[in-house]
View 1: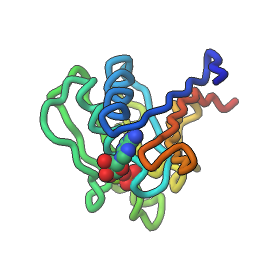
View 2 (view 1 turned 120 degrees about the horizontal axis):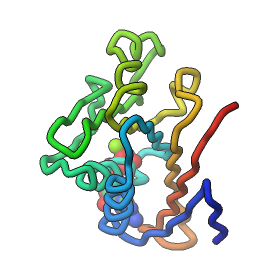
View 3 (view 1 turned 135 degrees about the vertical axis):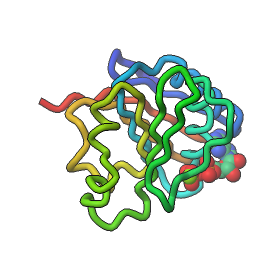
Length: 151
Ligand code: ADP
Ligand code: MG
């Protein structure tokens, strides 16, 4: 599979492998970065996020903050802002929780279902897409990482 400097692809065949890709990216994450996580329900976004948090040095469990939209974890190498915007009605709800301090702060943000808040994404972010391909098996996932840089 073709990897370029701005784009990388992994294929996994178990939740543990997806966790480990997340962990690797969490270890590489830098202050001020925003990661978006795109993929259908049940594809492995939470598994990936748990690995990502572990990679940042967060020991405790990380669950989807579905009813609070955002959950912050301070015990890792960098502050970790985990957003799940699946149930968001309007981007104004993002303003109410003060997302700008997170997106443009010194921590690392990860936004599940970021396609629902596309208009407020920063010009520069890292897009992670997870997809199934049932022809390759029930547990197969394709994970793509792309550096997005809007002019
Ligand atoms: P999402 O957050 O995208 O809705 P979850 O991470 O909660 O999805 O659930 C993913 C489900 O798929 C889990 O039950 C997990 O065990 C299963 N699974 C099977 N194969 C994989 C894989 N390769 N990567 C991630 N999850 C997998
Ligand atoms: Mg989830």
